[in-house]
Image 1 (cartoon, rainbow, N blue to C red):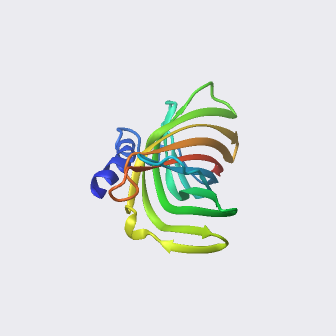
Image 2 (cartoon, rainbow, N blue to C red):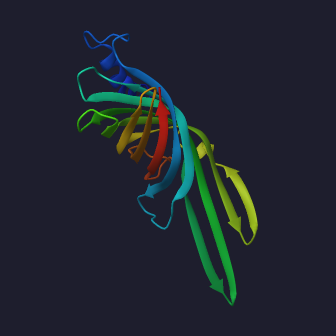
Length: 213
């Protein structure tokens, strides 16, 4: 499964690298950094009382354009904090008992996105994003607080080592001569189960900004 998914993720890059007449020297390639906020959740087949986990994402970006075409490729390596939270409160015989839990799933995420620019060329360039991603688990733990006591448990053995899915997004580039500032909103739709033997998939809204040069 890992070999199949990695081939799927990098196929776009290999395609564009192999286009006739578009050697690396001819392709406009930009490097940069992007980071922002993740509003993450996990979709379960048989449970819907969980809520979002807010985290951050940051990474290195590679932007590959195609001369004379409004389509390019954006990829990179991102550290991505994801997961979900849950909270329960119940009063029994006048005593209120509360439980708060946070599932922390932190990934190394690799998107390969088609970037479609629209509108006339200029200092402001809006674009659409779409494509696959692969993600590799870096940390998996559950933090549970009950009646003032907090315990953290490693759940790496219960979490699949790899996740893959699709990303859709909308953004804009601001071209400032020597650098380009970019802002984007993305939605990550996980297609593989996170936990073994459970219907559970990642859902992430990301608001990111950065620059390339």
